[in-house]
Image (cartoon, rainbow, N blue to C red; front, side, top):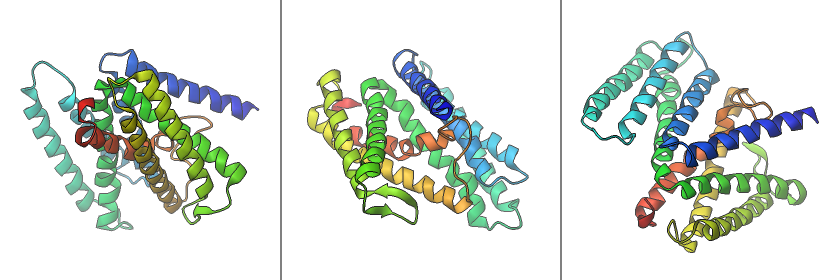
Length: 272
């Protein structure tokens, strides 16, 4: 019972932070993305830390914050050139340092994956999250559809699941759970349309987006499951009691956000 209470409380705080940032803090989506990014990069480096852990973490966080500063809405954009130049230098420094000072037991590709791929794996989706703040109902809708999909996929799989989806990566996922989660994500999309109205997206936009989110969030979840299995760990961290780390909470988001951004740019063009 105490674990359930702890899990519920940390989940409520997580949701309140997201809602507050999206609806009540000016340009809050950028601060939310920066918060996720800083915490996520710290956890990412702890997957397989090396003696240069603090340096790589510091460089990664600096690149993240510079990237956020570049896209952050401001009256004078002239400073973006300086910020961009500094960012490029830091990225090159991180890449070269990863190659030239890699641990003896790690090959060059592993070092680049840990430091450079991990950086972009987190930063690019979070930049999309920041930019999506101009449409708060679409942004919160992505979170809601992911939450509905995850929750009802779990419940459907628990009571109806028979056919394993990816037993070697995530043994608990079933096709029945996937179908149940997809159904409720679509229902959430319909309710979001009713509440948000036509000014954000048409109904068919919401429904198509729910399908894209279902597939992209599943991909993100499976990727992190494979990553944790490869490193022999259960959770990415202990930041959220009862839930694991921040990467355990935003793994689905890291694929869903850029997919949503591209969808709004290429299909629902009036929405961004």
